[in-house]
Length: 237
Image (cartoon, rainbow, N blue to C red; front, side):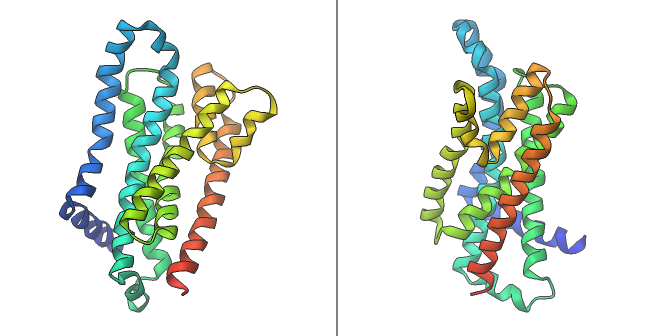
């Protein structure tokens, strides 16, 4: 536990030293205030917006969660540039333990951020238990996006481009709600598809067990694959 706390403390120091990373930590707060205060105001002016409250919350939960993954990825990119990750090989902490601790840290705060957004957003509330289940899945978007950026981006400029691209891809599964038949399942390979499906079923009082456990498996399989790619590109070269 002390090793994990030391790693977390080091990451927090790095975040607070970088004004760009620090500003991204405030994005979830701004987003929550927007949903809580501005969306109801707009809904009063334009009642048709009420139909899209579920989609606004799906988007809000996802954006809140991925910010912590984005910050984590930029910390890793900094360490790649400075060859810090190579130096970890000679430390008493194994590279696997080092990365796992960091990803769990990002997952925890992503889950917490998503829970706060859904619980206090004031619109499209799916219930207490379902909010926890949704937060677990939303939290897994953090290691998902962190590993994609940290694995394939060579620097922070490329990392920002990857972030924008992945962010767009994570929005695509919302299109499944406007499609019919088997076509809508084409997005099922994107992990967040199952989170959106879980949110939709929670609001409609439908079956949530399938969406939760299948989604959990998809997230873990994709994250495991990305972790192996990261290990091969960074630690095994």
